[in-house]
Image 1 (cartoon, one colour):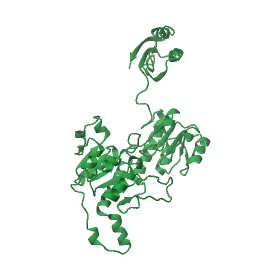
Image 2 (spheres, helix red, strand yellow):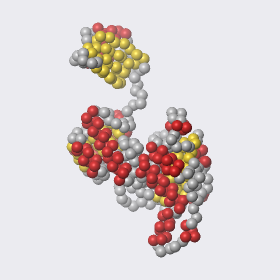
Image 3 (cartoon, one colour):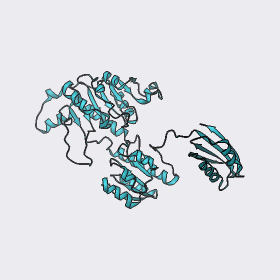
Image 4 (spheres, helix red, strand yellow):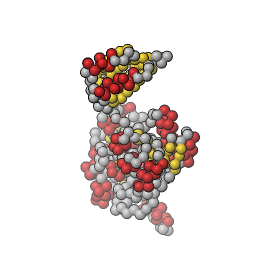
Length: 404
């Protein structure tokens, strides 16, 4: 299996892929047209990326069957095109959660104690203890969490250790799929993002970027923050209305810590100008939330596990683009002798009846003499067609139709 790694990747990951028997092409600076051409020229089966965008032309240019995002978010990958071409997209959820939570909390502490300004004045030869002795402290101040995935959970642990009450809004609690009372850290649930903002002294964003979350932290949320509150975003810039945030900074003394910005340079270095980032009440970092040695080693190990599983078993862990529900309406259950041509006979007649197979499972009994095939279909075959299938092959022992 040939693997094209088109981003910086840990040596332990490269060594792990080689040990798994993969043929590695390591080109960490590839992007845009050069990456499209490399996918075509190498004939790679698997593409590994971190922040590099994976576009439709790239997915259509070669023989890729799997794209692994060596990280959590996968918004830089054209998942829709991958799905149309039957290309698996997988990621490494949770492996960078601690690193991102550590940075989010570092930004929070920096906002409260004005650490960057302290350092800048000391480096400039200025001693100003009177000014920098002004801090609110975090103990007893309410942390609001928007999102309670892996990173949000790590934030809750740290906030709890600092003695901060926690209020959270998350789709997992809002939908009723999980009960907030079962969470390991004591917290309260808000009914909306607006309510979280209204009840918080600090609002920290930990939402994955999806069509539903794009722009979710809008002016209606930001305007609920109390004057002098803190706001931290280490998730995605697109989740937040930065124009509304800029207004809150300038008019209501909201102090902000950001690791993500609109219009970030596509490369690791470059010129960057941003009005919000230059404001003295805003502390920014360079989209480095996941960039610790610990996180990158964990992500590399998970990437190796995903690719090795695919190579050895055909199964892909952490797939993000499989259908949660197919168009199947019926299941055809066929009990048969385990001999060549039985399922081909069934499929041929289903095709002639314009019935599409959505999913198939063939379970073999001990001794490999008999099997049961479960075939999900997008419609119900007529009785006459079922009779033709059963009577047309002597190795079919029984069949029946189940409505899904």
